[in-house]
Length: 302
Image 1 (cartoon, rainbow, N blue to C red):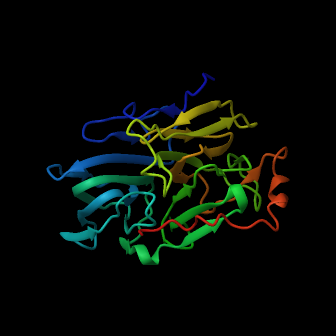
Image 2: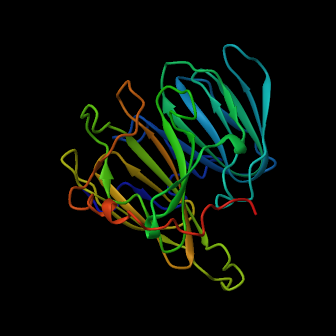
């Protein structure tokens, strides 16, 4: 396996008006998809009807308009208010079930998480105040998770979608873990997409020079399911694919905050996120007991 074969810098996955596209056309990839675009107000991006479910997620800017239809509703329009940026707390999102089509317009950056399926679920709007916000971990493993596309928050067929904010100097996706085999009650097989963004950490914007270069680190390594090696510096717009193997950490550099959007789905009928820690590192969870959550969290739209 070539080093970083499953890692893509911004622009390397561009197709047409989309800055990044991940779909089943990629060899070895079949259960998840992602589209990211920067809209200037003039574009109208089409999401064609097909056997695929989607969540439309404003990343920065807005408002956005989603003109959509499915078998039950024709000619509907959903407004998404959006947010200033991914480090400003949760956003409103829109779920469009398999068989539905849509046209996106507006001003700002938007992502579309996808998973192929023939099972139909009704369209659903989730307001930002209804997005479950989880503060996970403690100490330097503290991070903030927006669980708008998890089984507890959304009725869907296949995918599990969430986003994570990791403040500067903190680690997430750690201990390194995997979900590439079916072990009932212990592990579920799930492909995973990471879409990254980075920024000067909250409160330090006036200190950073114009040429500041926000970055973070991300790694994967082999499991019994396959050989994979990512050791990458990540920046805004980069994408990592995890078909199998251990993944983590995602480490935010001092001075720079890290965001990633996760899209997961797999072949199993059951829609669950169950993982296995790398046995060399799982013990670290026990050291978190008694530590306090990072006081910088939660991040919101101050």
